[in-house]
Image (cartoon, rainbow, N blue to C red; front, side):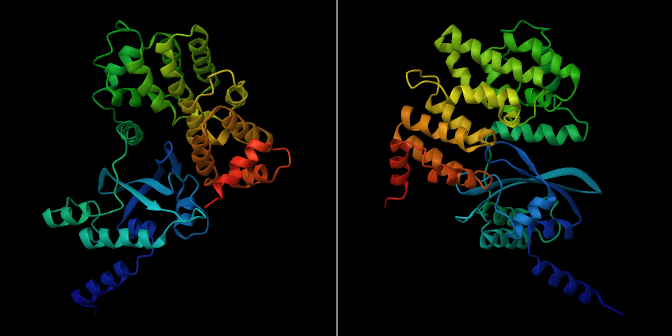
Length: 362
């Protein structure tokens, strides 16, 4: 009959042979979800995450040569979720650096063992803080994640009611000082509800920048209904027409708000119109170009459209801006074949050919 020592030995062998984060979480008895939070916030299916960890596929949403992950997990006997924010380097093919991943696992096991949901003591906390793969996400991303996790458990933050009342027009539109960013995110994660959509549509024309900007930052993670898409595009175009310098700061935020909906035909048409701006028009600014590449990259679906984007960059931006954006886009696995076609295209301009050639000069 096995002794207590035998059970501990079996447990030790199991923990020391863990080969993935997925396995670590499963062995600890945790349920978990994984999100990419590098560009915007996208859920990674367990199947995709497992393939990424096995180096069967490149990481789908690379940012600055890394995978930026939020891993939330909880156990059945304790519904309180825990969050890890980790970033791992990727190789030139976009594959996960498994040495870094294994090092991260070793640190977690040394600090916590299989009790991942335990409150760490002083020694454990010291080990966890020495973790070189931990990072602190921007506050607006943390706010959206908190709302996303809370809404699935039917919880609201203390700021939700205030944000809802404000967006419903129950207060003066200039009395925004007590509207919390967390409350705005709580509102946005409920945008699938018709009543929430109606409230947003009624509020959009009235929102001052201190509310509109964080609201757009939350909207960038949500697939929007067509009425909301059209309202955001209309607000962007109105701000351009009115030529109010105080409104131009809103343009990049309004474009960001369309990020998760950039494959919708209305958004594709809108972004194409920005890309095709004549070089004499300053609308295709560096900031707008960076938002298109960094958050709306899924808009690119064909060679001609992608080529036009690169030609516009060359015509209207500094060479350093073109190089940074080109390197960022070519690192995205889904875009790489398309960009290689552009590089080989006989229809590219001499200026674009020269700019691409400079990328490969030592």
